[in-house]
Length: 388
Image 1 (cartoon, rainbow, N blue to C red):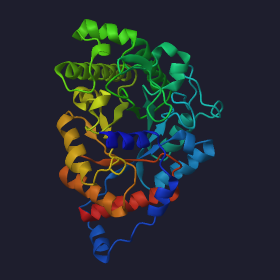
Image 2: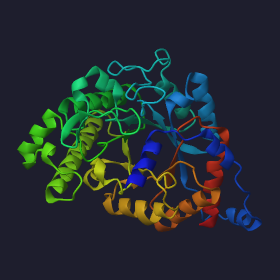
Image 3: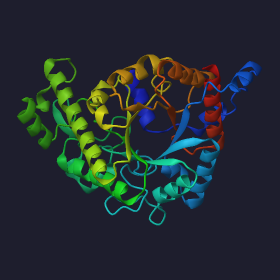
Image 4: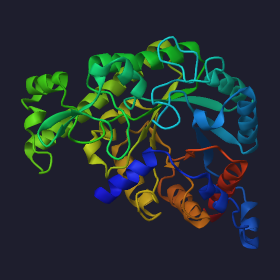
């Protein structure tokens, strides 16, 4: 788990280098046999969705127009636009990129509504926009309400959590005030913008030893008869299992609140969530508990970061999600383009063969979306369709 966690931290810090894409951008040409096969109508490419970090891509309306023109040329169907900062890197997590009356607006975006510009540019090109809204990784909310900060049990001592290897900030997912705040931001977006969907993220704790703040301790003692300050987090036990199940249940109940709130405003808005692989049992996230309230689940399939083989995506990650999802919940694997061209083609080919209900792949870049990146993705999809 230590190796997995280190890779996980690297991913969630979003420090992918643009050079990784640049090296891979020149995809190998298809063979003559593949070109001939591509003319056959039987195999259609999987749909392409892109995930955009606003701070790295949209500084003004011209940026948005340029990006969505490229997306249109690549037949992109959905763009997940970062509406609320996800990381504590370029900007503090929790700051927003739209005209909010609730959350603090990121510096430089006071007079540029990146969400409104994205919707305008996307909809005139027939592209859908999902507002990507990270939840409990939220420095801005924690700064405004220090009492919301996540508290961890560190060797029997309760300490405010500031991240493991780098400074980062979480708020307590169990606190009703935290949930009410995060939900109010979602409601504000759905009410004020014609988004096609909401993509939740950071629906979790950061580790098994949290939260242990006063509110959570009292609630846990009342509801399951456990005080998390007295738990041994290093040894498997029935009490630890109950703690894990209880926390996962709280996350699930929150997702249900989000679903109900959106349904009451505009039922046509799709609800999705980016989720971690099943290996990360310590974060209190169990898709089986909240799949029923999602239209889409987007598992993060960053195999290279976590030192897995490309085949892990289908044999482990997708197989786990297939077991846990409800029938009406669509799976959209999320890839980051690392690995070779051949690796990515094989992943898509395996998905098409083993999980025929999957109709789209979401692609993430932590940095600026270079045109070469998008062109490479198109080539990957076409090659996978040929192999199918």
